[in-house]
Image (cartoon, rainbow, N blue to C red):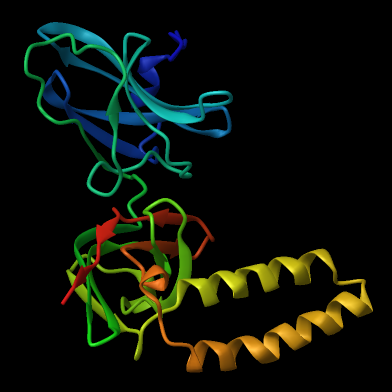
Length: 268
């Protein structure tokens, strides 16, 4: 990542009591530091403050969005980026919900994990996630530790852990999509999911998008749509059609989609 020196005016911390505040701790920051919004960088809010980093008093700490080609959020000390997060969120991603990665060797030995809290993007922090197949029924369980402006979840399945296909949608249980308490979710297929059939449906959707103005293609599309459900219901599921991995996508009210970790399905 390129080294960026930004001309933040740290006195702006004191100019507005209405400014958004985030707090940074860990990652060689000796004492938690409150950062205030000092404007925008690359179209997103930027934050700045001073603190003690690796024993150096008065170190300027900045959090901002680094635009193209990097497109990452950055935590820097005196202009040198030390951590980044690639989640394209409107506010800095909170570390309780999003992963941050060290991009420069730490200026102190054995740094504590970075913590970014306060007025940050959280949406959904995932807890336990599990999936299993019993008697040809796929069951998925997950927990949300927090939800902010959450609309719904999408369950996605994959054979290889790389290419995923949506198989179900589950509406958020949180009131108005917001919760600070752990919420458990359960879903089951009612029968084995055929990824081959689902892949065919995805192709149907693509054909429809590409051929909306073609009556012939549209007629063919209708035939496929009529045939696919029947084939899915009657087809015996081959081993190659069984999903091996599951992930959960959280879809916020703003349409932003973020994913959980990938989980291996246990077959019993």
